[in-house]
Every structure is written in C-alpha cells, then in structure tokens.
Amino acid sequence: EKRGDREVERLFKILEYSTELGQNQIDRAEQLGDCHLPSLKANTDVALSMCDRILSRAEQVDT
Image (cartoon, rainbow, N blue to C red; front, side, top):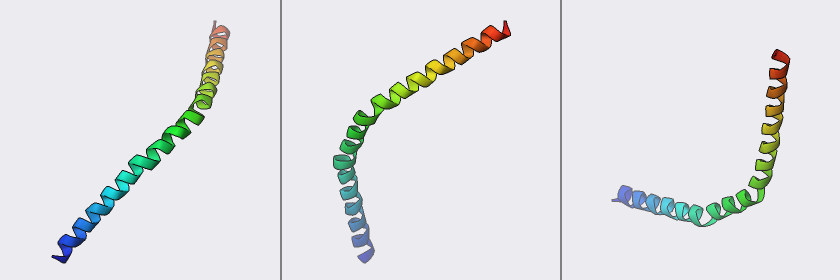
C-alpha cells in the first residue's frame, strides 16, 4: 500500500508541476518571444541579404 501511495503522490506532484509550467512558463516564453523575436528576424533578414549579395558577386566573378 505504501508503494501505491508514493506513486499517487508522485503523480500529483507531476500534475502540479505541469500545471505550473502551463500557467507560468508559457506566458513567460510568450513575453520573451514578443520582446526578442522582432530583433532576431531583423538580424536574420540582414544576414540573408548579405548572403544573397555574396552569391550574386560570386556568380559575376564566375562568368
């Protein structure tokens, strides 16, 4: 019976932890994403543009 009680206790702790994650961490991840993703996108767009220019110049040199 003790083992069953421990397993039930463990399941309740897992449920409590996952509920807490759902309530707190997802909201925090969303806030951080809203804050940092625009900057990340802008930097990625700049890097992509630079790659395109490098490829274009390489094609000009090859021809």
